[in-house]
Image 1: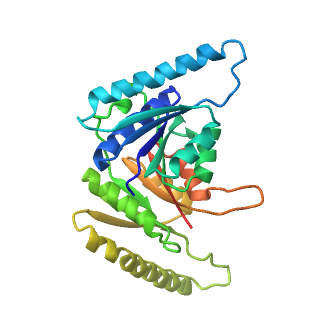
Image 2: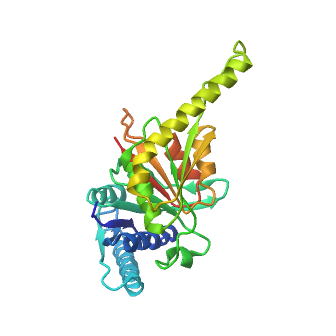
Image 3: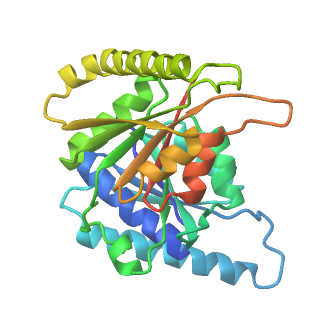
Length: 291
């Protein structure tokens, strides 16, 4: 897709980090960068609202000017201040975007992300990939478009639903960064009962593991052929899927996970693996939706 990289900006440290990450991504992909600042209150008759709006516009203009000064000549940067609900504005901007980039507040290495209501809502509704970026302790480093993304690209792959869009995003991200792609498949064999012989259980696990390995090899074969310059390492982890993916992302530069588009009477939801990733992984997390 050739749409822009859209970043949600509200002046917070996490949104500043998101603009830095989004600017680097725009440079890597040769795409326009769009900063979107949404003001959720259309009425301006509340005391102080006009000043607040002016201040937010000034912040947005200053960030755009800063990025223009450090990005490569010819890079296309635009910004928009819209009087709409933030989640609705970002979802609308994402319809024609290559990806949305949002900030998330990091609490600690144990608690991980504190994902705000806007990010949660956009994740549920957006059809383009959404990347969540944490604010780092060194805010200047995280906000700089010149900073490098260190670490491997990690893909949490579900072999039951190996979506091409998710795999393609991970291969492309690794190729653009000249980074290693680590593909992790987490699986849990059927739970045995006390009536199952140990020998039979061991044989069953071995057969299931070999079957999973063959399926992974077959799934990745066309992608290895299309992207021969990407170094790919694969790993099988016997664990709960969400826990296994979170652990595999330790030290990564980017984690890529899929989000199946599912609807329920109480609204869309993002699934347990994506939910765990955005709450507990410290590196940027790309959530790619699929049908």
